[in-house]
Structures are given as structure tokens and as C-alpha cells.
Image (cartoon, rainbow over all chains, first blue to last red; front, side, top):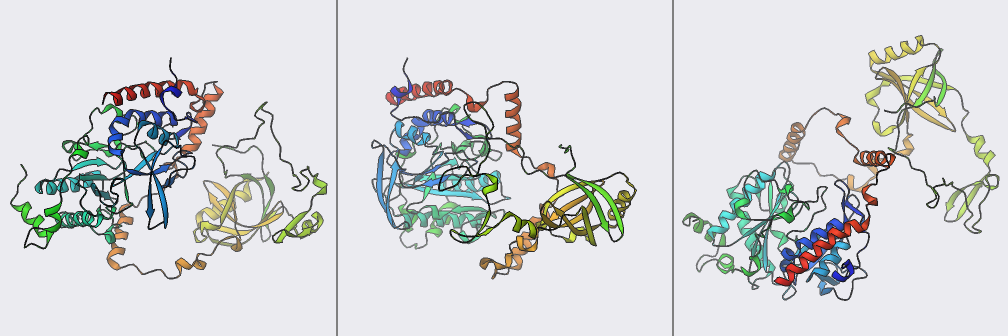
Length: 313
Length: 259
């Protein structure tokens, strides 16, 4: 009979500690969840700096963000050094490249893993473009789904393959993997253009930060496409009372009536497939969409015209 | 619901020349549960003692005085008798000086509430209660409890006279002193209309029973379990949990190897 020490080099501690008091989930269960999800998560996490949100005393107590690697980080954990303009100092990001690192993070009660939109290979050139669709009450899940489907229609019309997941809270994330040729300012500009278009098509979608707080609106947060900003990692737990998960979905399953909060630590492991499996291999170009076509300076216009004579198959 | 066994105080409500004899019962409770500290090894209750910081020795009551810290580590010393002399005269009276609209007093001032019950005769009590009830008024006055004098309100609540001690003005922070609040921008009409609409849409009756204290419920369940001798989740043996974790680990390691 083997024991835990032979399976992982992480020294597991306080396994019985309750991290989700409402439903009584212990740290052992959180680690078990991440162990089970590791085959689906590691491909995505590889080479990607992460920011942790840790809840050592459970989610009813204040958690804390941790960008810099925690004190006592073992030497076998990979890190990535990067100077932060905002913090005016070097930050040593943790990079989760293997199962042991994931277990180590779970043991730190790092319930939420947030990933950057670029990798350590070229941190100024994003390989993910993110549409963060965020509702402001009383807008609900159906409203978010409505805007996401509108976005999907738009991206389809541009021949772009997009991927969708729940944020684990109220919103949805739509991601386009791109080749590492663009700056954040370019990807941000692209998302902003599409968001502006959607805000004209939909009465509740808004594309400007100044309107975020308007009740009943759905904000398309293009500003997330910036250096140092992060997105919750697919399959990461959230610090919500019901232990919800940021769940990758197949577009076919994104319909009104879908309840994003139904995906939790308890049932996510039972969904066998990973709709985001091919994401990393599907890197696309934005060129035409960023620069517009020759003679057409306004990319928005391009978007509109293409949409009108390009029906989705 | 809790009913305290013994009255906390007894005396008379005095309005001019009228006296209403009453008993006072505690009505509000701060904590859902109070726990006592015990010695881990043998479960014996622990007591607090005053320990001298310098000598690390227990100091008996008669050797203590009170100090007011004027500046860091500088104290003005008061003998017990000096403070005693400054205390208000305790009287067994609740003096009502005037009657006010109960709703005109901001709840910010409310401190603790007590139920009054009639002492011996209940005629005067019933008269005062009915008068306050029908006029929606509250008596304002004061009471001395132990060593402190409190402003109070006396009002009718659920068929009883209820006394609420109030905080003094000096015990409340004045929001107008906050810099951030001095130059608030006027909202635009459009925004204000929207805000008002939300408030109207979400308007309803206040019902305190809609609010549940989940901590209290959980502790109550844990106590019930412990009383029956059941083990609770926190004490679930770590080994049992590690078993499931280990199975998951073995499975994942296998999967990762196959890739």
C-alpha cells in the first residue's frame, strides 16, 4: 500500500480544514478536485504566470491576492520574473507547469487561480483575446447569454473560432486564441471595436467603462486585455458559498435558461469532455480585423459590412 | 425564544407625581452562543487574572488602581474612592421628563432594550401602556444602572412597556466631519430617476425573520450532534479523507502518464 508521500512531493497540511463552511468542503476535497481536474487544466496553465487568491481560513474570512510567489515557495516550483510598472518592483509569478505545483497551490488554499492572457515566452504579446461579459443587476444570466450569443454570431461572421466559459460568478468569458503577433493595445482595440458594435445592436450591452455601473446593463470589459491583467483559469474554483467553477462550455450548450451557478466542485468532475481542449492549437490571426481592409480605415465598418452579406452557415 | 429568569432591576417609573412600580428584564442578547475557555488537557474552566507586565506576577484586586493614559505610558492615577465619588447617585427611579414621537428618535442612539413588567399592582402600568400605545408616543427620561446614568426612551411594544437606553451625543461620530462627504456631487436627474425606479421596484415590508444567522444555525446543529455523541466534520479523521485524495492522485498520475 502506497501512501501520499510517494505520490506527491508536496507536504500536505490541515487536510480537515473547512474552506467552504456553507457546504462543509474541506481542504482535502479542494485538493482532490484539483487533482482530478489536472489533466484538463495543466495544458492551459503551462507557461502562463498566475495570480492566486488564497483563503487560508475559508471563504467566510478575507482572502488575499498574491501576485508574487508566496513565502516558502519550494525550489522546484517554476517562477517567472517580470518588472511591474504599477508596483514599481519585480514580481516573481508562479507558473503552474505540473501536477505537484497544482497540488501545492491547492494546499495553500489558493482556491482561485487567475491566469494572464500572455505566456512567459513573450509576455507583451497576448495569445488570448478576452471578452469579459459582466452583468450589472438586475441583468441576469439570460441577459448575459443573449449578449454572448450575439457576440458569437459576430465572431462567426468574421470566421473566428471562439471559446466560452462561465466566470464562476455572474458572467461569461469568451476567448479567442491568437498568434503571438499583436500587442495588448491591438487586442484591446479589437475587443473594444466589437463591443461598440454590440452595444449598438443590443439595448443592454455597453462597451464603455463609464457606463459600467448602470443597472441592468451587460458590460463588455475590453480593458482586461492589458498587460498584467488576468482571467480566472478554466476549471478554477471560485470563492462562492456553493464552490462554483469557471466552466468551459460547448457553444451548443449556451442557451437561455442555462444556470451558470450549477457548475460546482461536486459535479464538474463528472462532465467528461473539455470543450476548450483544442483551444491552444487553434491560434488565429486578427490582421484584417485590426487594420481594416485597404482603403477602409475604419475597422468597425468592415465588421458591419461583412456581417450584412455573410450569413452564418 | 429566551426569557430571562430574574428581573435585572426593580424600581418605579416616575412621571411628575405619578409612580408606576416596575421590574426590568433584559430583552436583547448580543451573542448567539457564549463559550467558556477550558484547559485543553482536562476541561477545567479557566479564569482571568491581572498580571503585572513587568514582574509577570498576578496582582490582587486590593493592589490595583485605575490609570488614565494621558500620553503614551503616562498615566494619571485614580484611587477607587475618587472614581466612586464621581459616580451618579443610584436611585430606583426611571424619571420621565417629556413625551416625544418614538419615530423621531434616530435608531443610531438606541443601545439596549429592557422589558418592563408591573411590580405588585398592574393598574398604573396598564394605564401608562395604553396611553402610549394609542398616542404613539414615547417617554423620554433617564435611568441610573449600576454606575452609569443613561438617557432612555419608554415606549409600547407588543403589549409591553419597553425601555431602551440611548447613547449620549458624544458617543456618536458626526458624519459631517468626514472630508469625503463634504463635497458630494449632485446626481443628474436622469440617474436619480433611474435610482428611484430601482428603489421603488425593490420596495417591500421589512421582516426580520427573512434574515438567518447561518453561523448560529451551524453551531446549534454542532451542539446537537455533540450532545448525541456524534463526531462532527471537523473531527473527521484525516486518514479517511486522505484515502479519497490518494485514489484521485493515483488516477490522475496514470492519466498524465498515458498522454
